[in-house]
Amino acid sequence: MLPSPLLLVAWRLTVAASGLLGVVLAAQVYDVWWTALSQLANLAVAGTYAALAVLAAAGRDTGRSWLPGALAATMCLVALAYLPQQNGNLLTAWSLLEHVVTPVLVVLDYVLGRRRAAARWWHPLTWTIAPLAYLAWYVSADLAVYDALDPGRPLVMTGQVVVLGAVLVGCGYALVATGRRTVVA
Image 1 (tube, rainbow, N blue to C red):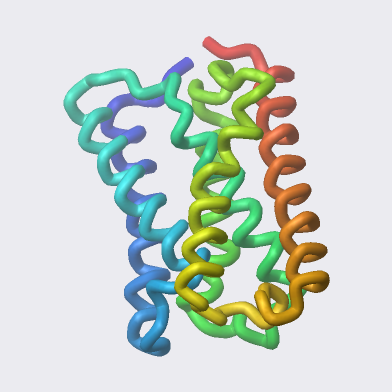
Image 2 (cartoon, helix red, strand yellow; image 1 turned 90 degrees about the vertical axis):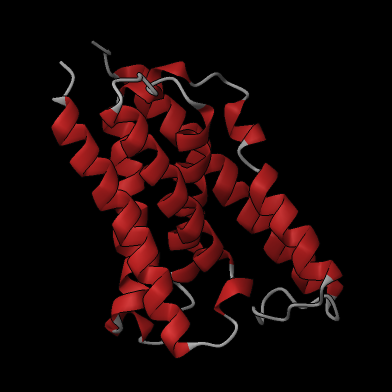
């Protein structure tokens, strides 16, 4: 059973607001907020879910989209890569929103929404496109945001990239498997 259009619009606006508020609060604390994957991913969530809310308000079915799966997998990466590294930073509102609340909302939306049934076995591999593009930009622009991703230490960085890639793809396949176990109305 699908939620009412008004409820769906409200839900999607809540997800968008969570992502946007996390970024806005981070921008007040950091001057380089736009170079971190967590802020960029939260901006992508804010924009995508605002657009999905507009489409839901217009009565357009957006339930079979590739993008929510890619966002869910990326937000899993944001949360799972950050949590072991954080230094008490989850005590701040921006960090809690970006690294816990928004990822949970996006994953819940994917798992509980209709769009999960559309995922194919190869989707998790394609969901790596945006994080890989970020990694290419990170290295080429010498962003130096993360200590663990230091191009000056290629073996350490390669190991970290392999682990992060495995986390991303593993989360993607877990999301696909979760969708296959649930009957979609």
